Length: 57
Picture 1 (cartoon, helix red, strand yellow):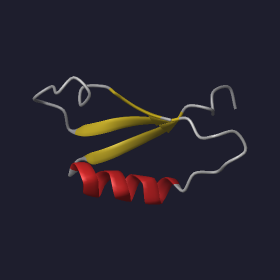
Picture 2: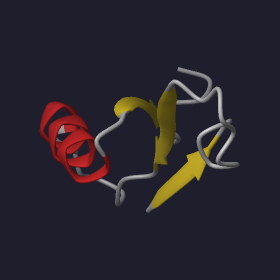
Picture 3: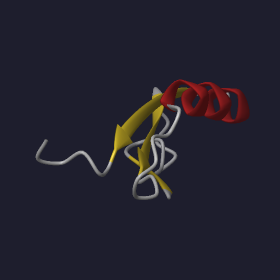
Picture 4: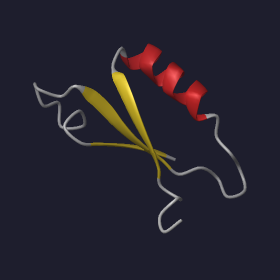
């Protein structure tokens, strides 16, 4: 699952990047570099990724 948050999600004029939260399927390891590359190419924005299943580790 992907979710967008931050100023980019609100189409704020001063937004410098797009913040993406990623919740991978249990037991999988997403290729974060490929995800960032693909999302940057698709959106033409700088991408910040947060893994949502990493809390408390």
